Image (cartoon, rainbow, N blue to C red; front, side, top):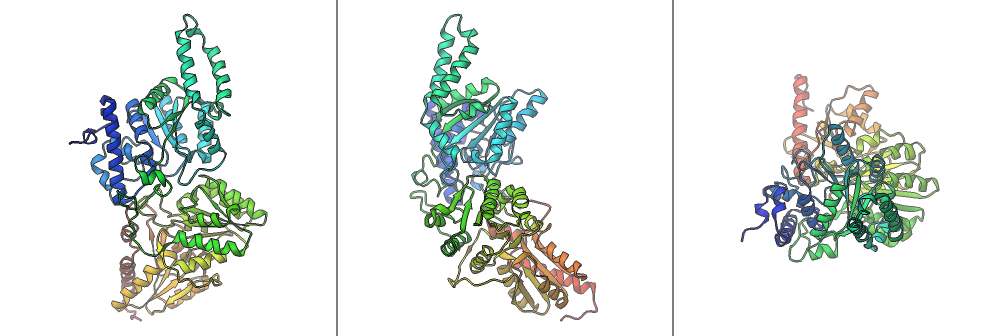
Amino acid sequence: MARLLDRIEHPGQLKGLSVSELSSLAAELRATIIDTVSRHGGHLAASLGVVELTIALHRVFDSPADKLIWDVGHQAYAHKLLTGRRDRFETLRQADGLAGFPRRDESVHDPFGTGHASTSISAALGLAKARDLSGGSHSVIAVIGDGALTGGLAFEGLNHAGQDGTALVVVLNDNRMSIAQNVGALSRYLSRLRAHPAYYRVKTDLGHILHRVPLIGPGAAAWAARVKDSIKYLVVPGALFEELGFTYLGPLDGHDIGQLEAALSGARQMGGPVLVHVVTQKGKGFRPAENQPQAFHGVGPFHVDTGERLNLSNGLSYSQVFGDTMVELGARDGRLVAITAAMPEGTGLASFGERFPGRLFDVGIAEGHAVCFAAGLAAAGLRPVVAIYSTFAQRAYDQLVHDVALQGLPVVLALDRAGLAGEDGPTHHGAFDLAFFRQIPGFTVMAPRDGDELRDMLAAAVALPGPVAMRYPRDRTTPSGRPLKALPLTGEWLRDGRDLGILAIGSMVKPSLAAAGLLEARGISAAVFDARYVSPLDSGAIVGAAQRFELLLTVEEGTLAGGFGSAVLECLVAAGHEPRVRTLGLDPDRFAGQGTRGELLSQAGLDSEGIARSAILARDRVLQAAPGRRDR
C-alpha cells in the first residue's frame, strides 16, 4: 500500500488531509526517521517528539512565505521530510547529503541556519522586524526547546521581543530535556506550568463567554484584560512570559494535532508576541528512545527492533578517558570541581558527578555563564574544569578573555570534539580553538596525541597556576593503564629522520607517524615531533629543527589561520630564520562539510596518505628551488 508521505511534495498538501490521514502520516514520519537514523546515526529522540507539532505548524502556516525557525535543528527531521526533501532523506548527515540541521542553502523552507542552541528567538525577531520595515504581513515562528531556553541569548531575545511588541510566535517545545535532564530555576518553573493546564482552558472559556453576552462582549476588552491578569496570577505561578510581554498559551498536549492547530491559529491572529507552550515526549513512538531519551539524543547506528547500538569501533572515547581521569584526580584533590553546560554524559563527566555529586555543576546550555562561574570558583581557591565541546567554547570568548585570562585564574577548559566532528557538519566542527586560545595571553594551550597523554596533560593542567585549554578529538583511543606521570612544558621527538621534520600537534601525531612510514618506503627519511603545546610553544625544539632540516611540515586538525603552523612560522621569523615550512590543516577560507571523520580528514589531506603526499610535494619544491643541492 502506498504511503501518504510519498504523496507529500510540499507542506501545503497537508491542509487537505483528514484526521485519520494525519494520524497515519505521523506514524509514517516516525517510521522513516527511525529507519534512516538506525542505519546512519543522527539526532533521533528530539525529532520523534515533534512530529505532530511539525504537522500542525505546516497546516496552520504557509511555508516558505511564513518563516519557520527550528532552534538547534535537532528537531527538524520531520520538517525536512515534509518540505520537498523526502527523496534525499536517505543521505541525511552523509557527505554531500542533507544536513542534520536546517540550512539556508538547502531549502527555501529553512530561512535561517541553526546548529547551536538558543539562537532562534533573536533570529526570528530580526526576520519579523525586517518584515515590518518592508510592509510584509507573513508570520514568523521560532520553535525552541526548554533546554535551549536556558541559554542567555534566548532571554535576550525574549526581552527585546516583549518590549518591541512586534508580531512573533514562539513555540516552546517542552520535553523536559535538552541532551540531559534539564536543570535550574527555569526547569522548575516549567514544571509548575505543566501542573496547571487550566490556564489556557480558562482564558479560552472566558473569551467565549464574553462574546456570547449581548452588548457587553465587544466593549469589554479592558475589563477582560484585568480579569485575565487576575486569573493568571491565581492559576499560573509567576506568569513569567506574560510579564516579559508575551501572550502565553498553554500548556498544550504536543501530540494532539487538533489542539495544536487551534492554539497556533489563535496565535497567528493575535498580533504582538505570543508564546505557545507545548509539552511533548522526547523519543515518542520508539520505546527505547522513550525510555532512554538521553542515550537517543544523538545516536549512532542501532537495531530498530531492540534499540541496541551497533558497536563499530574499538577502544574508549577520548570523552570517557577524560571522565575517568577526572574521577581519579578528584579523589586526590578535594578542590577539583567540574562544570558542564547540559552535557554530563556527552563530555564524560557523569561518572565524576556520581562519585562527587556536590562537585559537578550542570549550568544548562549557558557556556558564557559556565566559564564566568568557573572563574568565580577559581578566585575562591577551587580548581574548576569546564568540559565543553570545542565549537560551543566559541560562545564564551569574552568570558575567557575578561574573566579568566585577565585575572590569571586557574580555570581548565577541556575542549571535546576538537577538529572535525564528523556527520554533524560545519556547525559542530571545532576548527578554531587553537587559533583563538593562542591569541589570549596567559593561556597554556595543549593537545594530547593519545589517551595516555590526555591523562598526563589533564593532571598537569589542574596543577598549573594559570588558565589552560586542552583540546582532544571526537575519536577513540586505547590508554595503556599506566600510572600518571609528570609532563614537562615541552614537546617530544618520537621518530628520528634525515630529510625533513614533521611537527604535529594532538590528533595529527598518529597519522604523521604513519605518514613517516609511507615516506620511508619511498626512500625519504622523516622525523616526527609531538609538539604537545601551541602555547607556550617549544621554541627551542622548533628552532633546532629548522637548523637541522631543510624542510619542516606542520600538521594540525584546525584552521591554518592563526593556528599551530602560524605559531611555528612566527617563532622562526622571530628567531631570525628564513623558514622552509609547509603548513597542513583545515582550509581557512571555507567551512568543512559533513561526513565521517575519516572521510573529512582524507578530504583535507590530513590522513597518513595526504600528509605523505604533501611532504613529497613540498620536498620536491625545495629541491627544484636549489637544483645543485644534494639529497641528505
